[in-house]
Amino acid sequence: MEILTLSIKQKFFDEILAGTKKQEFREIRPNSQSKYCELDEDGYVKEIEGVLQPRKYDAIKFLTGEYKGKRPFIVVEVKDAKIELFEDENHELVTYTYQGEQYIAAQVVYDLGEVLERHID
Image (cartoon, rainbow, N blue to C red; front, side, top):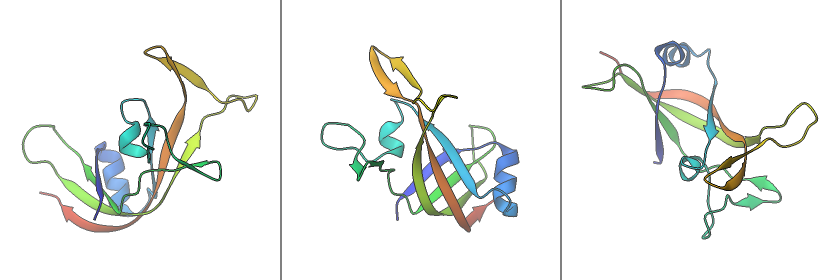
């Protein structure tokens, strides 16, 4: 089982447990691209019929609380994932420059399912 581990604020952690937060959004940056996207052998995001491909995960392990010691966590099923590109008010893709290279601003959206495991002290 492929599990992505993410830190999350307590408020959102509680909303996922309550079943009211059904999606998780994460901005894709150059340093997190391999975590969220399927990459080809040259390090570019794979496309299928023009659609950017998110990296496949079966579940997300959400951690909350302080970064030291034992932290409460839940493991939540990932039902689906997609990559969304950011557009401005004129429907033009938003770009930015990082270390001299141009990137398109994007986020990955995870559709959340059942809570598979919980460790809350």
